[in-house]
Image 1 (cartoon, rainbow, N blue to C red):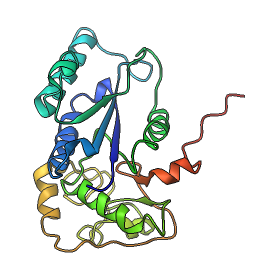
Image 2: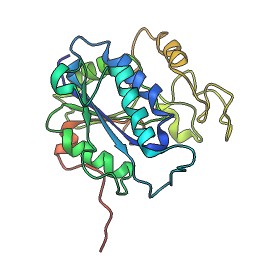
Image 3: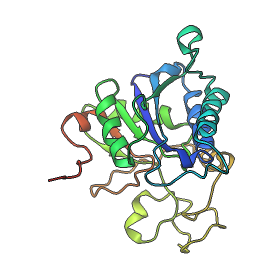
Length: 246
């Protein structure tokens, strides 16, 4: 790759059952490039219970943390205790080195992620525990950035998404989804917002593509899940505002 990319994800402890397939999709995408270290995989595993209390009668927080560590090892062969000795083929960064007993929202994480990695990489991508990313992701983003960085160094981009609730989303809906009806709360149809598509289903759609369909839209429209930004955009001062506590 010609550019370095960072993808970051906040994982709340109660999302432990969701995150494994997301991380597998990230690994699949990193495995498509020659140098795996060209992609930084940043993860913040948050054990704060402000938003939701754990039921200690069913499971302990230490068990959930152990499960997260096991997922990291099973997918990436990453072990924090031995990483300094044996290394890892993937550039895994665990951002939650400080106290875990504080409210830390998705807005907090994404703001910090942007700031922390905009100087180290050329492209930033927001992951999310209930999302999947195409295995072609980093190859596409590398080529896209190389193509536009001279004329458009500050940009946002987004992959085609599922069927949304009104026509304002049409420019970023996937072409196979956009002529389907929107059914509120629908979990059965593959094009629906609440349908749980698995990795194999996603790959089946993307494997049909022979030429990328890249569109330029002048009115910003994106879902935060999978948003891509050039680092130059963040370095110019664009970021998520902090809450005003005054």
